[in-house]
Image 1: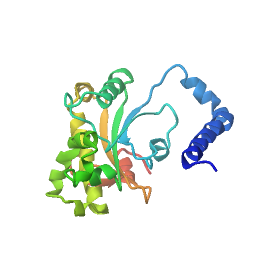
Image 2: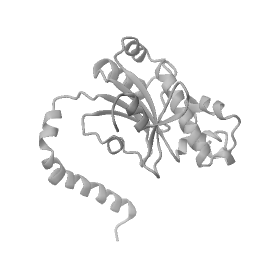
Image 3: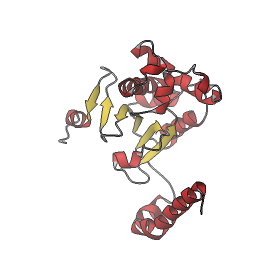
Image 4: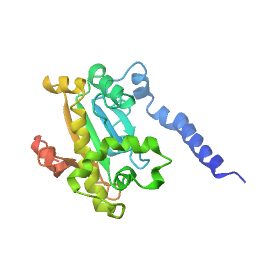
Length: 224
């Protein structure tokens, strides 16, 4: 009998085989057109959570999104923690010339639940995770004092939305983003994705409230 590890690997490899044999052939022209370069319109920053599929949510094709994923969809302030996120932002803005940056949080986010109780001894074995989540800690201030028992669905949702706004503010500390904003070459937007309902809402930076996609499209002169 095959182990659980073997079965999960087999499932992955069968998926690749299906892609090679059928999906690629169906979209061969698209993939061939992408072979020599990319020109995505959007830098999409979201959580590493396995339930989030940016291309499915946005109904975009390969080559449309430049995706950055990490625990808690975090953007460290410029100079605070130079690394993969900072370099991806610079590359997306300065080289790929993306027109939009979206920061997308989500419901039932484990990172936001952990943020309610970072001093719990269970995190002693995860010092890297704790240090990383410190970049989201200021989002808690909007909700007041929080304890582990507060980490219910509504609190996690509110914290996730405040975190999106915080990471948008962090984005504005990156020189590449500041320059592109000043030149009118880029726009930033925050989203919240509810996994159970499939609904995405836009988090308005000015009012700090959620707005429906339909309303935002209407503001842009598009009939949804």
